Image (cartoon, rainbow, N blue to C red; front, side, top):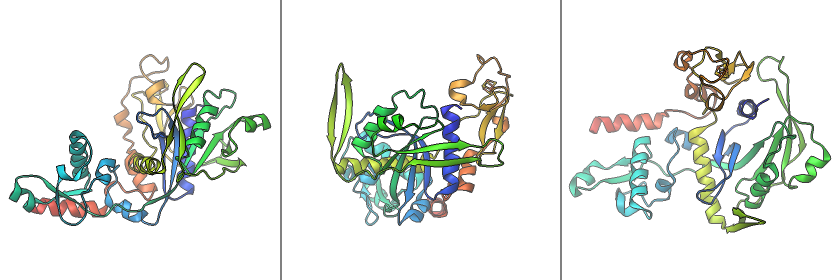
Length: 334
Ligand code: SF4
């Protein structure tokens, strides 16, 4: 099975069984730019998860959350940021667009400058974050060990897990850091609906996100440069990770422009199933006129609204009431 199909099935399975947010392919580094991409991220809900749902269905820009724009008195946007003005401007615009900031029209008109405030306090909405590395075939491990060593050393997430379809031997376990949990995923293709079962081969040990972490940076012949990452920097990176997971989710794939593909909802989520290859395909990397099975068609005709599906099947809301109310209010006075 391809890593892509494995990943989508696992995400669909996790989404059905746990509260919170499931997302895929998110940056798991603190360094910027960082090289680590986490295959699957599960964000467990914190005490104010419902308040986050009410705010907006989008990712809130980190600079906007960090800024001194508060919920009380409106502030001149430029004076509220401690970062490059271009970053501040784009964060302000995006925060206004998604309804995290609102304009104070009176204060703006009186001063001829744009005054903004937050529509609500940023909520304490996420709790533990779990990173899952997918490697369906342990016979082709690639950089698996180094990736998991990075996750454990940095400890940006609370738990690191390897998910595989392979039989896991003692030798495999020895090669992985002790803290990494191991899941063996069994798939029953004949089963209706979600025919996936997770066998826990080894429980993950809790990592320590609130302690300093070690992040590998560039590698040269025979040595790797590392950096010690402070708990504060990790806390900010965790918030960015949680926010990206919230806005993005895991249904970020495309459907190909090909008649051989049909939407398949058997796993509990609609995925692109290719009749010619007889499996789920990644339209971005596998499909196109060069594929011998390609029959020109229109992806749009499949009309799969993955955002609506996410809205229907999870606690996440694409267009929460709070945001709609605010926008109606703005229209009235605009
Ligand atoms: S382009 Fe090829 S792999 Fe993609 S859906 Fe069509 S036949 Fe399948």
